[in-house]
Length: 418
Image (cartoon, rainbow, N blue to C red; front, side, top):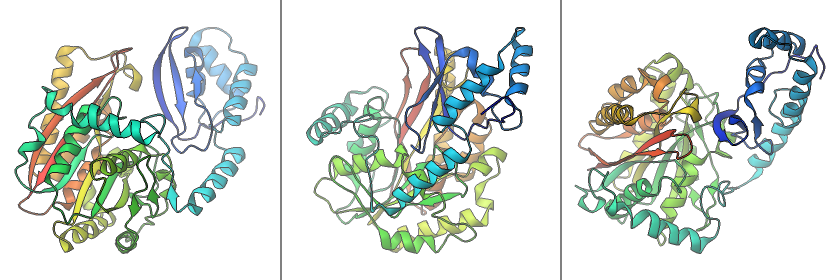
């Protein structure tokens, strides 16, 4: 790496977090887990990394930043930063591509996907995890005043569920509402769960299947390989396994597998894990239903559900809005703005409750840049699988607020019953 190099930051997750020394820092995370530690950038380096697009040399970047700040920014600092990010596998290039190819091969060879977030987002020890879910999730949901209806008042047999995918520490009550409702309202014959999850890493294709069992501290959850293979036949015009590597570190489905295992400890069941991308549709706002590849694939899911009445339940692991400094906003929302956000979120959810997939999509994409609803694709996909006569009900809505900077993530539990 030298002054003539053109550093290119690859697709990574970026969040802004409080810092005692700098006030705020930018944290770069690898959603695929190819690299090791996160990269932490103090404010003076953020405009530098913003120019790591592969279009400018390090010399040109230094000159551009110097013009922005009105003082000389050394080329050597740009080169040093680029070298550090390259070694950390945050830059696109031969070093990263070689590492990614190796990790992809290793993941492809596995028959069981490891519980990649155990010990971080939830307890690694079985007994501690069981106690946490029972005490802090399932038994606390009834004490929450923000729920729309207790799970015990389910109006019928559950056909589908929208659950959070925020970490279980912060989303305990929401998970309690979602999985308390599921456990009390699915028939004894239910043995398959189709799990739609958000892909937080970019996807090349609209959906990504995974043929691996999911490990959890409570035991592995088997994959329904026969149904997964049958569903792959409906992937007309795209490879449903092209983005299987995205499953390696993705938490949106992992958390659902953990909670299913917790609330159904004695039931033999299998899962069909599907990551929903639909990134190009979200970028343009176009209704994915107009895309034959998308509609054809979801026809396959719906036929799988309809072919085995009562035995297949569809779950979407999906959060709603992400707002505040942590996500790039200038400031956190005040009470009035949070109330306005809740109204907007509930309007979106009302479209979902009414099976209005097109209306749900249109309502969310109109302010997607502001609300950053990361659960848009899996919720929309779930709605496309619902049959006539299924009734939706909002069970719980919550805004989880970061106590350090006021950033928030909203999420909901929504049950669909027949």
